[in-house]
Image (tube, rainbow over all chains, first blue to last red; front, side):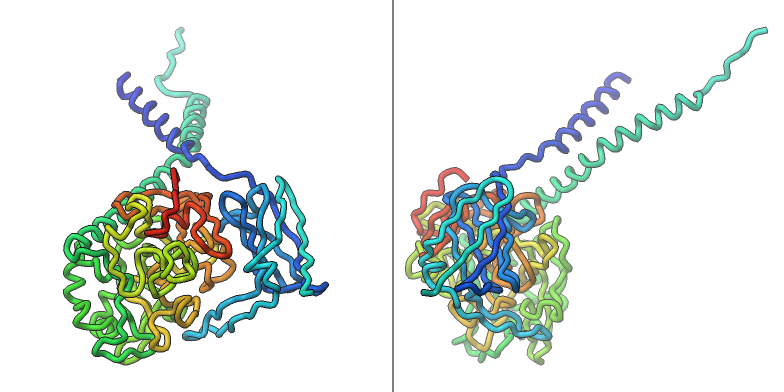
Length: 139
Length: 335
């Protein structure tokens, strides 16, 4: 009787341990949002990429008002806390066009190279909420 | 007069017992759920182990790893838009205990398009060894939902191929048909193991086979958005120019990305809608990362928080990109 009771208790503890074993290596994140403008005009459908000095980059696409909200991974918002190099680009390849899918044509680059391919933009992300607006200029 | 107590439990005793049992069950349920997910993860690891072993056995037989896909152009059969090119998964079938399927499909003597005409059943059914048990996708792609994950048979009927969650390693930047001319830069071509007519030998993997990704997983849906997983057997041609890729006709709803993967947007990428460039990456429904079969045969769980930076000028400069390249000489250290 005692041995069976002990067995039950042991199984229970084991099951509880399995349940609590999940740990996370997620770094500290800060929520980042803002508006992208080019010569005062808001930029829609631009891809904003924040690349940290170490770790995983965060991406976002601007809406029709040029507003973006950075996402870290499929389930998480934000970006790694620290200094980021930022790239903003409107270049996009075409999608769709097969079967019933509508063809979404490719998009050309409307933003100067110094903000994407040879980006000089940097941003500082701190813990908590961050509002980072980008006022880009074509010159 | 003595009051004889009846044998049995009082109501209070019964309620206490029921309450204790209820608390125990409530404590146990989450544990049971995570134990079930742990079992599914183990099953997924086993599938990747089998695929890794099959590729090793393929190497043992043919002295090189399976080609990413076999280019149909230049063969005796003229290639038309939406035809199928045989993929690496078709090549390893005999080493996956699926020799009967491989024999029926006549991979090589027949094109994928010709085989689909006569073997629709085999090319559209579910194959559990090629599916992650945590994944929620259907057995086969639907030509209506994802026409790019389908190929045409000889009577030009578009048919969705069997679904798989396992994709070969192609590139650090967007997927490319041709081999890289500079093994440290993914914009010069594919720096990974699988590409057009590839025949990578283990001796070509100079970064070390334990530091190089062979095969990884991709989910049907993550974060509520369809990522479409991958296709078994074949990949769809785009306008007789080979499967769509960054160095051929670029259409993100089809082609090379349906059989191989990139790490351009990191593990478990941010998806906003289906059939975008983000769908070419690795993903899974296992919490926090994906399983990879490394080139030495081990299966590793890699966290989505791994260093995965990749910026212009696109040279290999982070741990994850270093794991993809076979000759990039990037020191990945512990990961």
